[in-house]
Image (cartoon, rainbow, N blue to C red; front, side, top):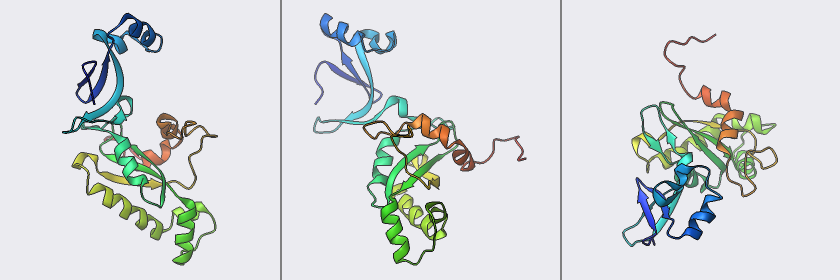
Length: 205
């Protein structure tokens, strides 16, 4: 529950630096003067206080997706909802400066493998498996159910099923298994671009 040393502006948390000691300590870790503006430490957390006064942290400000239409989407709550499905290992929302939200989705390959074999879906490797129409239909259903609870501008309109895990060793995840968004987006730039129409005035070669 927030106290007199905590304020929220536009859903972003700010902690008041009420003592010289606090200012000195936080000053060592703040990346710029902006983080300490106005005598408050701007944590960059996105959240809300519920009717009972409990504080809920839902995302990081730096991770907000700003669509081409100016809407801001907090990806982590949506990703978490999708990851709750047993067939999903990882979900990464994309759409910064794009016309709509899309998704990179990593299957739980062990469960998907068993599901496919039980259903007679033929494949020789995960690349072939993730390209199967039955598999795409499975994940489309998962996304459709998630979309039912989302605002129009948050809805996932396109998705790509990746044929490999995102790992710490390859730099896609932090040691605490958080997605390194910029690295994932750079590595899968071609797949992301393919989910969107080409910019107006451009021509395919």
